[in-house]
Amino acid sequence: MATPIVEEYLEAIYKLQGAGKALGTTELGKELKVSAASASEMTDRLVQRGLAEKMKDTGIRLTRKGQRAALELIRKHRLSERFLVDVLGMDWKDVHDEACRLEHAISPEVESRLDKLLGSPATCPHGHPIPDRQGRTSEQPARRLSGLRRNETGVIAKIAEEQRSLLEYLATLGMMPGSDVTVQQVAPFDGPLLVQVRGATYALGREVAEKIWVREK
Image (cartoon, rainbow, N blue to C red; front, side, top):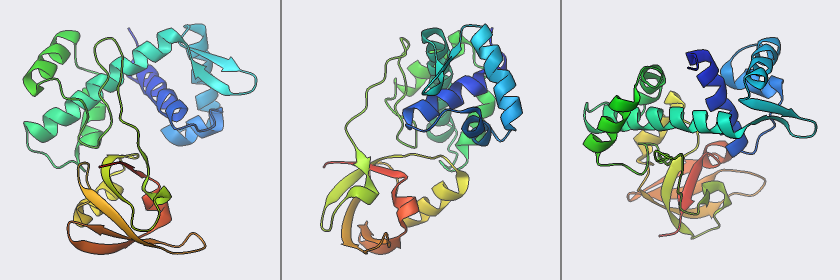
């Protein structure tokens, strides 16, 4: 059985792989807020346990066994987030850290009952797909809000990062999964986007716009 620290590493590697980021120990350490030396030591342990492998050109990569373990953890995490929001009534900006604590303690039996209670939800409150029991995920095509042109409209599909301050800010603007958003103006030289959400208009910086993914209506 994997320890919580091993599970955290597997989850971080999986998410970095999905984001297309470099997977060296320096990047992994930054993601987990540990030193590169600590990340390197733990990565060696994952390799010894057959959960990860070090590639010459692409850095750290999960094996099939490691990916399966990561997806099991992500499923528990996102089901926990749905439970905290849908059943306990917590705010979406507060549930990520709580779910991080719960995901390591949920047994397969509790996971199955949670899924049934919630009606087998497809996504977490932030729009990320919840893997099924076989580790399969399905996600509609989407692109970054920062890539939309003037007068283009989309529906917010997910928020790429679950940082509390970011979610709190977006909630004040009404920019949550399921909300329509229209780009009214695109400033040159990587300037802000002028966007309309729920009848209100806001100037949104490119850095924030890149973390918002939208799909066609």
